[in-house]
Image 1 (cartoon, one colour):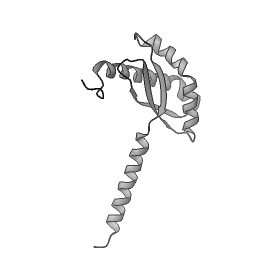
Image 2: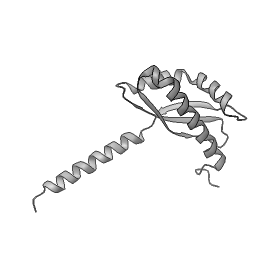
Image 3: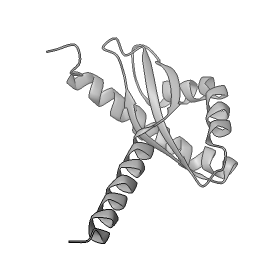
Image 4: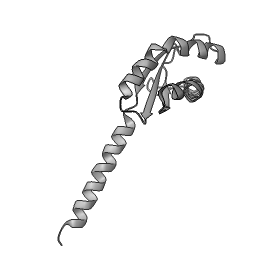
Length: 123
């Protein structure tokens, strides 16, 4: 197994944390902020002692404010995970905004502009 390829256990635990965090956000956090918060993925190191939780925030003009509020509640989320996910170590949670949706939107925009320019080009 290579260092960059996560093992089965890492993937399984990350998936379990993603499922649990998604449930918590749907039940508790989205009502608080009145926007859609999605857990897009969770990445964990081999020791499973930390988890990076990638989020997207839709329907808010200030996703950074929401992210900061979520980060301030990280201890609360750890307690929830400890009670629902049976692990030897309760991972420390790090929340960040997932840049991939922005990259995808930018690429889609560039493709659309290129297509329009190509169609408007005289033969």
